[in-house]
Amino acid sequence: MRLVSLILLNGIKNIIKFHDNLMIYTKKNPYANLLELWGHVDSRNRKFGYWVFALMIISSLAEFISIGAIFPFLAAVINPDKIFQDPKFSTVVVFFGCNTAREFLAIITIGFCFAAIFAAITRIFLMCTSAKYSFGLGAVWGSKMFEKTLRQPYEVHLSQSSSLVISGIISKTDALIHYGVAPVLIIASSSLILFAILCIFLYIDLWIGLIIIIGFGLTYVTIIAISRKKLIDNSRVVASNSVTAIKILQESLGGIRDILIDANQSYFCEQFKKADNELRQAQRSSHVISTSPRYAVEAFGIIALVLTAFYFSSEEDSIRDIIPLLGIFALGAQKVLPLAQQIFSALSSIKGGAASVRDGLNLLNQPIPNNIVSSYSPKLRFKECIRLHNVSFRYQGSSSEPVLKNINLRINKGLKVGIIGSTGSGKSTLIDLLMGLLQSTEGQLYIDGEVITEANSRQWMSKIAHVPQSIYLSDSTIAENIAFGLPFKEINFDRIKLVSQIAEADKFISSLDLGFQTQIGERGVKLSGGQRQRIGLARALYKNSEIIVLDEATSALDNDTEARVMANLIKLDKELTLIIIAHRLSTLGGCDLIIKINSGRLEKMGTYQEVIGQN
Image: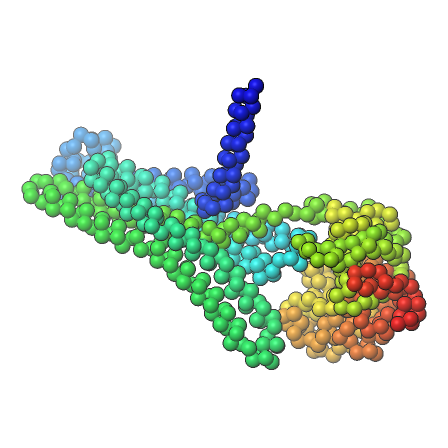
């Protein structure tokens, strides 16, 4: 019994060891990324991939025929009578009805030309098809990365750098193409064609063929062994510095006003120069490694041909017989050299881009939350109230005190609610929890008694319009920014005019030459802060949601404009629930309920006079 237990224990240990080794291999070996990448190819593109592989086989056969045809062609040119009388070609002579050696030479010449043309056409067609396949997959993967990233929970977006995401979606998609799919296709097609040519070499002359194969092979294998570590190191440098460069560009251009005022352009220029210089040096190193072997192999090929010609040059008959042999090896070597170089460059690309491919795979492997997988359902109703019960919240990975602690709160439908508190007290986190953007660490959010979970949070968020302090505006027209996310043909301009009046934006919009068709520039740079906030308010109203949440959404407005906007909002549908965060206490004058947050706790709650009047 003890022996059986020991055997089972050792077996389990070996299984665990094998699993650990496999995981290490998968993470460290650049070629393992390709197997994982294949798992992200959909069934339609997999079928297309099989068709591309079949085309590679056809192309290799075409090259086999075109290279093989050079031997009888040169032999017929040098000694047409001998070839015409050769029994091996009697079938061809009879089939085409050749009466003289000259006619037979003409047939061989035409056949060789057709074989060369057919080989060229298949190679071109294969190149076009492979490119279509590679970049088609890139488009699918880029869209998949973007979709998965956009659909991640809000807390994930808070914890990751936008520069990393932008780099991932743009440059890492390119990495999957240039360091993943394209090299594999090049290796597969070039290997098949190379194999066909080498078979011809071995068939024509076994020893010379072996010398060429071993010479070429040893040269490339030696260079691969020497350069492997350097290429992998370069891949890490390229992956990290491409992200750093994009981050510096994004941050510097985003804060251009402060940079111009502080005159610290030199700092950002130096930071970008350092990252970009390291990136380009690594790219240069990988490029040199991937292209340099060609010259060594060219020298080897020339020397091999010269020595072969010298060896057979002692006798006149031998040199006449060796010319077709030299011709086929010369033409074959001309084909073999770029093919071998393409294979080596592709292998170098896979190693040199391993880190970038890994980053791209990490984005493709992002799980889609449950609330995205489940389609929108109208079952969730908001007829009575929003309720927080014993809610606490701490950000993931944070060891500090919870941002919110034991919050109990009830907001009846139709109430106008104001939330106040000092900076950092937890106001914005509270509304993020109320909107379902964040899931509480402890406690529950209830809507009419139904618990809001990750699975149904999307249904709850569909009832909410949110206006942050800093409004994101796209580089498009005012109308498209108000009806944000809708195709132009679906925009309701009557409603846009109505919500613009409520948001007190109609006057300044009508004063513009193009009105609602005015282009506002990147991030609304052509508008003032107050104008941008009123566009944001109009956007929220356009949604016609049951709940509107304003997070310092009127901070840039003057007192009179803010008073008119708030009065317009208060007069809206009595069923509309309004939740407002504001530092300016006068903003909350028309609210039915005031909530005061202090250090993550609910300190006071009541009417305006009860809460603010006691300060």
